[in-house]
Image: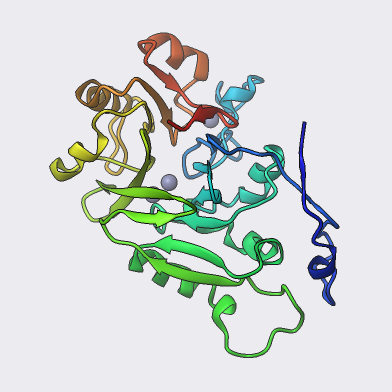
Length: 288
Ligand SMILES: [Zn+2]
Ligand SMILES: [Zn+2]
Ligand SMILES: [Zn+2]
């Protein structure tokens, strides 16, 4: 059952070329849940042109779009990252509204769907807030320079309307909850964020958890943790390293994300203890 939320006919049909905008907003109510929009590595699974068993698999759980989740919070939907497949992911899950975005880091597989945020200002009545570190803001301002031009728009909705909210290691409030940033190492040079809301944490691109972040990941109900492949990698945890971290943190349930085509869903699931499972696109987790 998909509830219809409001009718914004007036503002949505105003004088522009944003023709695909509906007369009313169709969206699924995900309040109290986190939905895994994508759990694939930077090139996605299947990888273009790859003939391996996983890329050729007919099991939909081996079909992974780029990594992202969305939280259904009391004040609206908080999207984590804007992947190149953001539009496809939201349509697939029938989620028609994004009220704010928080970014883990500035890599291409986590930001390049940003232009598709253009529709949301019509629905939420203002620019989309982007919560991110300054390094992410700088990358977005460079990569999407047209969104920040001072010249008048050619027509309404031609550019994304965005407002930056700078975040640091300190907890911040958004959409009625407190979000705890989790500083993470993503290779030797890049510091990124995971995020904890209540007892659910999302840590996607990570090669090491700094000692000072361990305390922020204690007593979790659910942990979503990046685990790229079996072989070690310079900027991501491999399966054995991720399992060791799970054993140290002891969340009730862990799901692996940011998985490459070396990881076959059913095989990996059978190799892991019950309290660790591979995620899949569309997985839902209760927020507690
Ligand atoms: Zn990534
Ligand atoms: Zn492959
Ligand atoms: Zn990355």
